Amino acid sequence: MTKIISIINFKGGVGKTTTTHCIGSGLTLKNKKVLLIDTDPQASLTFTALSETPKLTIKDILVDQKNINDIIIETKNFDIIPSNLILNLAERQLTSKFGTEKLLKKAINKLTKNYDYIIIDCPPSMNLFTVNALYASNHVLIPCETELLALDGLNLLIQTLNGTEEDLDISIKNTLVLPTKLDKRKKVSKEISEHLKENFKTTKTIIRTCSKLNLLGLTKESIYEIDSSSTASEDYKNLVEEIIKWDC
Ligand SMILES: Nc1ncnc2c1ncn2[C@@H]1O[C@H](COP(=O)(O)OP(=O)(O)O)[C@@H](O)[C@H]1O
Ligand SMILES: [Mg+2]
Image 1 (cartoon, rainbow, N blue to C red):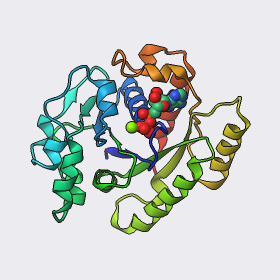
Image 2: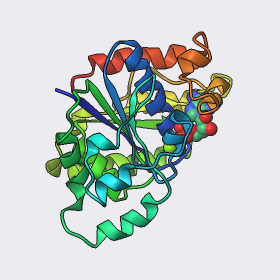
Image 3: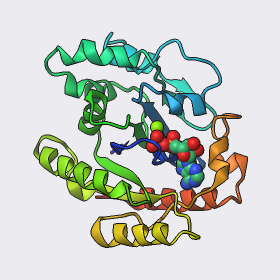
């Protein structure tokens, strides 16, 4: 069965896109077939992965019902379904129609290529695209910054997921919080990471701050190509091992 993982958090800047990219390229290094889907109109994942602006995007699948197989772009690291700003307008068109929560799930069912992993990078809100991602997924990963302000939003997100559990294929059992941007020099950062471990189901891996991650997108290379000995490469390799073993 394809492991389909939504990367979500209501907050921006917590490492969703970075995590999607680093897990995607990390799984590819492990010889897994990987498809990344960008559902964020900000299209950061698309920018970090592709040098040219794509003609066809996720909008063509969701709004214009184009064949998902025609939208996929292959890169040396993974396959990707890109996004762009026009997706903002698409949301308006879609919310006036019924049954639009499962458009992505239906499209994924029509994929002709067999993927081991599909990773969906979500926008920083519970909008129609996030809901589509959740309906299509069987696993959820929530990157959470190790800073005080992060906790408020996290509680709300977990409550929301709990409330929708009956409708979705995922259960809260398939949901893990990933502590990100740990700065060991800061007391508060360490304390929040401890708090996350004590109060939520978290990954064993904690992603430390690493300035090398800011280079993603510059050369369209993976973090492992940019600097294989960076702390980010080390942390994300550990996370990839966890993801491979993650059953429920
Ligand atoms: N572990 C990290 N250490 C340092 N910078 C990071 C880390 N993770 C992400 N970043 C940086 O933080 C910013 C936001 O990350 P991003 O993955 O785009 O977040 P999101 O998708 O949640 O909005 C980017 O500039 C990214 O390079
Ligand atoms: Mg993002």
